[in-house]
Length: 196
Image (cartoon, rainbow, N blue to C red; front, side):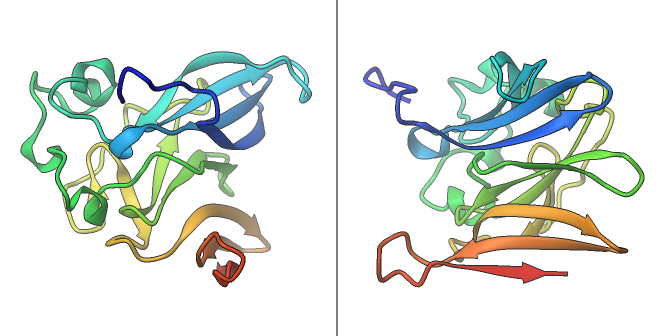
C-alpha cells in the first residue's frame, strides 16, 4: 500500500457462514490494496445482523520483502526471508492470486474450506480450521503448477483469464463451482458459469 491508502471503499465481497464450532456467525471480507497487496479477513458476531468484530487475517497476497513479516507467510513458509518465487513483478498475477472474493463452505465431511481469487492468478482453495475459522496451519501444500505452500490449491484460471467471485456448494453428491466471467462495464458480457 501507500501513505494515502484508506480502507474506505476498499472492503467488499463479504461471505457469511455460521461456524458450528465457534457458535458464531463468521464474515469473510476482502480488503483490497495496491499491487495485489490484499487480505481476506474474518470477523465474528453472535447474531447474523451483527455487530461483527474483527478477528484476524485469513490469507494475504502481494506481500513483498518489506511487508513479508507483517503477514502469516513467514509462519506458513518458514525461514526469515521472502522466497524468490513471491517477489513482486509484472507477471505476479499470472501465477499468484489476489486475496479477494472469499467463499467459505463446509464439505460433506464437515471440513471448512475457502475459495478465493480472481483474474489475477486464478481461483484458489484453502482448508480452514473449523475450531478457529482461520487457516489450518497443519495442512501443507506442495509447490507445483496447481499448488502453492502459501496460497494453497489452484482450482481454476490464472494468467489473467477472466473469472472471479467463486462460489462453491455441495448439492446431492456433487460440488458445484460458480464463477463470474466478463467485463464490469455495461457491455462487458458479465455472466455466471457453473462447473460440476
